[in-house]
Length: 374
Image (cartoon, rainbow, N blue to C red; front, side, top):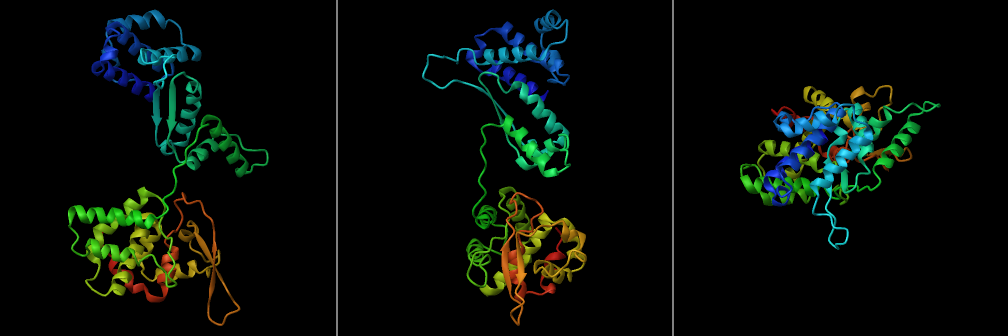
């Protein structure tokens, strides 16, 4: 098991570099390493590649203690003893100082295959009550719940939402102390910071300087009524990817000193960069046929019925809907929020900006950016 291998490797490192552990003696260290090797064999996982280097003492210990297969309780006892040895001398029940603990970090659990994520959680349930041992799981909760739901029996009504509730309850029993990372309140400021830091550090983009960048970001995300447009994903990792694309293509911006033209051109580049970075199926079609721009506007204005809506648009979700007001002689719309999950990857966040641009832009405006070599 990778967890046991990591602990075993850390014990070996500490044995070489930490004075207090050296005092325990060479025999104790080898015995401890052998314990962890035994547990790994019991649960049928590979342990450290250099397990063979554990010297004769550990090998003899294995012969003496592994004549029969270990039970789960015995494996727990071994791991608890290993933790106690690691922390020996640092735990003082009469002391006012904080108790030392072994902390195990398991990050990106949501990136595992569903089967692997489920098995890992099942295995962790065995170890959650170890004394002075804490497990910290980093995950996208929705993705992990999906993995759990795929393993749970379907409800009698065969309703997916009931299975999802059961999956959430399963995860709740394991993770009883939860912290949720807050979403960025101003994604545009984060994007500006990523681009500005690279321009400031490298000074390789002659097409734009820091002053011009700051002026652009003060206007690009303001609509014609003076309100702020929320049109970027509230995810720092995704914003960094978007910033990298923009940095590679700032040289495509036409040279002009007119602030209105600068704003228009940067919006064109930003829109293409967003679609390129996050919606590949849409980008390749738009790149091949720039007239797709008019179809996008019809979609955003709710003018496409489900029967004629292309499949690559059906897969996307809009953060808000436009409801046409038929009582006015000229087209007017009311905005209705769709309250989507901000963590979903299929959200077309840029929609409000594209709509605000519609009156000043035509399909041909985007061609220089669509044809760029990414």
